[in-house]
Length: 257
Ligand code: SF4
Image (cartoon, rainbow, N blue to C red):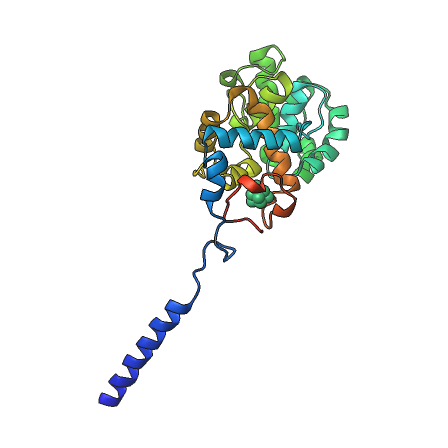
């Protein structure tokens, strides 16, 4: 009995020693995050205006011509393409719309389409049944309530079926140049958290944080630039920090250098 007790005590001590010697693992990569203070000395941290200005300047430098990558010829086509882009790449949407917009040239054509036909035509973009309902509903709403034109205010555009703030911000910003908010898609969510512009995960709260931190005249361009950066450099699984011009002011735990 005594022998057993002694053995257990020794083993607990051993475990404690091993724990003390084991290096701390932080975050999913097992690396310590880069420290903010070094960066903060120059431009501050989080949404400090100096730091936000530096981020915006660097995005301008890297992506002076960033724009929406969904091909469209008018606000209505951009609305339909944005609905189709949910859970789908812009490249795939552009492939589908190349023929789709020839067959359905306006809101009238989509509003009174044969649902089963339209479903098959947009099938490659995924979630085709729901997207068909949204496209046909939004087209009808545009004809019945807005004289065939995509409305130009957030309040009105949000009355269209299947249109939420992200889609509304894309259309108002890109097609009309109206800054009503910031587009918050999967890239903007990931990057604004990595860049410490928000601590939130909820798109609505992230948008509110970004609208507070970013000057209104930059909302449209900032959304495009962040999406471009998220697709080209600050990718989800292994960000290419070595190629990133924001590296000196980024202290994300996801950094790979
Ligand atoms: S340094 Fe890395 S994590 Fe930070 S913004 Fe650039 S690519 Fe993303």
